[in-house]
Image (cartoon, rainbow over all chains, first blue to last red; front, side, top):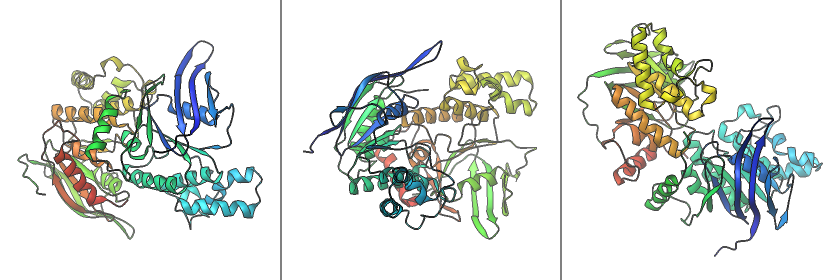
Length: 253
Length: 252
């Protein structure tokens, strides 16, 4: 049995956006735990508030109520042990692959030789060796997203948050990248919180799935995924689980 | 796997379609037929030239060699209608839903009564009557994409091309939209070529799947999906088709 240490606890987190006349609730008392070393998938229909939730966990957006515990301590604001891979490939177009990856360490004033060494390791890990001097415009979609992953890892986060990182990729590149991310997760045991709206991807990747309802998001169910890896997307167990989760998902037309 | 014989007459004939950009051969001598009221899916490895293939069919690109024939005569935009659904939603933001659907019909100068009839038919089939006066900006991405699909079907085109219209949708939404597109296709008896990366989607929709090779693209195989609609994705025969096609194009 895997040891279940609670890395993060999300307790009753709500978020309401206000303006002068109106208000809009996106998260309604969301509660779940993130276990140490697991691959946790947050699954929810389009526009259900997933990105808002992630931004709150990363400390980029303030919550309206609730609390977030990290290693048992309540945190507010940006948590430097959490790194994020964004949905849109938020790379600096005027910087090379290496310069993009080393950005966070550069801001921490790490000497160049040292940070280059660390970054090279992660560039190798994501399979981009030979492209260190290339600019983002010369890279394919999958390669750009690899740069984003290397950049997040280079900051040595304890928890890596990924917001639909492969949403913009075609189905086949996405399969390739899913295998990549599992390989990287296997080699670099970090806790991953991964957001997607793709049920198949969620079951293929996740140790556990937290299923969110449509907006305002609440936790509908938590599914532990015990299927052995590598998982077969057309096995009867996989298909049955996909149907079960699909039936429990809200359709947002 | 075998190819069964379709009794319907040939609607679109593609003969020796070849496209070169300079020395780069992208499409290599592609020949195939699409029958009237057929639903064909085209799958192929990433970067194999699917977009170029579509652009040659629509005549956005002029083919280097070969041609496209509709009802036996070379395709001509003055005579034939070819509709296109792009990957990204492309509703005109300054037009509301009903005007978006009527857009092409007005360009073709159809009588107003016929335009009204077709727009209403599409709105009914898609359950969009309540949204007919909304603007694309007020709709979700999936609803905006449905408007485009409705607009294309409303043209009653000789050939309807769809370039991975459901690429970014979640699974549940995809099944809903796939059932809808089947309903439209059946009701309006259109001839559809549907490009997708998603093999499950291809097997779910198509009567026939055209499998393209790596670049330069040619037709590796044509596969008839001999399953009645509505199909079940967990049917063992469905999975057999899915695995078979996956093996043919797998590069990852």
